[in-house]
Image 1 (tube, rainbow, N blue to C red):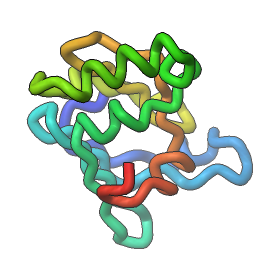
Image 2: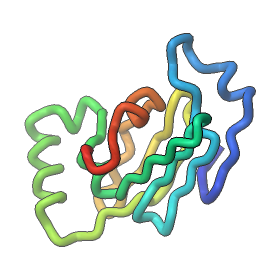
Image 3: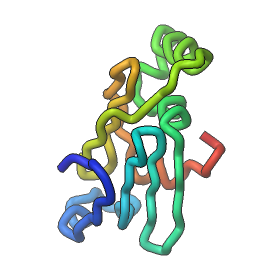
Image 4: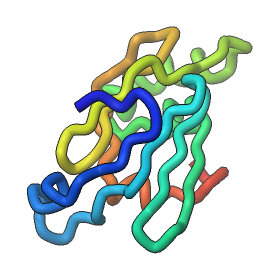
Length: 120
């Protein structure tokens, strides 16, 4: 399932999550490619800029020295970072970023829930 705008998630998805996993958000919105809004079951909202999410990418490549250097160069520049695509993958969301095309980080619901707005 691709996320292209406001998407209500169904309980079938929640039933497939590993035990101990945070329930999926009730609403996910990608706003103009520059922000992502998550609304959780208890009404809590989280909003992240594309730049914040790109900086917090949890993939192994971004944690390695070469990947970390490339990421630092991207984030230091005046280039606009955008979410080009978002896909639900069971326990989280796989994001593709522009302009670098990075898409190997899966943002689990647990990980997203643990991030505080502005603390990314």
